Image 1 (tube, rainbow, N blue to C red):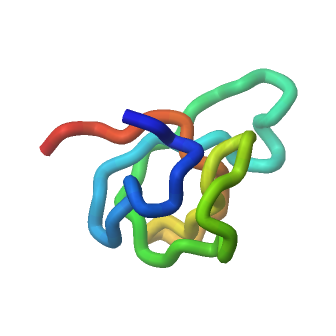
Image 2 (cartoon, rainbow, N blue to C red):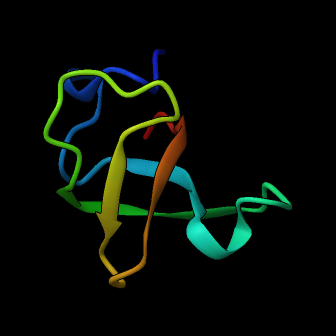
Length: 65
């Protein structure tokens, strides 16, 4: 599933994101999507989202529920 397409990411989806502080290490943080923050339909580094716990990062994986 393409993580660079905004239309692929739904509110309430379980995802893994890379937080800004973890960009160098690539450490993934798992959470549930609260808001989509990227306005464009496509972003080469992943769509930026806010998780339920308030953390913000770019989606790297979408998990099947």
